[in-house]
Length: 267
Image (cartoon, rainbow, N blue to C red):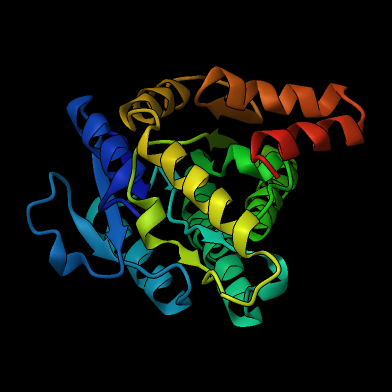
């Protein structure tokens, strides 16, 4: 019997690549989107789900369970970027980012857990970010929301251990996706004290995404995790230096690491 995989944000980018790869490996894949009608040519079904709307989460999970009877793997991939000086990002945008990157995925997990517990098995893969391991300048809110999701996963793993439900974090670095075009950018204000430094950092961040890794690397990594009997707590996927930056943060004095970030972003 083919395993059933539900991927939030499965219509483009990493989610789409993962879904198409898993289809080729014999999995039954369902993706989600707020506007599934736009993706009629998708290689796998796309169901309506907005991670900020609990009703759509409940309906989407119920739809897949009605058709398949079980969900074996949930891949919490839906997320959104946000950039800007923290001082200048509207509070509503900060809350919106946490709704999408943290509260929404938690609610999707809550929706699939009863079925997984009933079947005494399941795997939940939370897509976070290497940015969640450090407070990056002009990406502080994004770092915070993804970092919080990493910690929530650590706690969740322990709470679920008696139910044979596994959970893991997969933190990607920069991948060539459309995340830069869909994220919230605080405008570069003419009279802002951050105008020059934020503007230069924004250009640098976008160039990192444009030259990022092929999302198929993530697809292959996730396939390997699905076929691992006892997944690790954390996985990091991306350029060597991006992954190594996490190691450096752990071993270097705080101010030395901070200086490295300042030099990297030419601040």
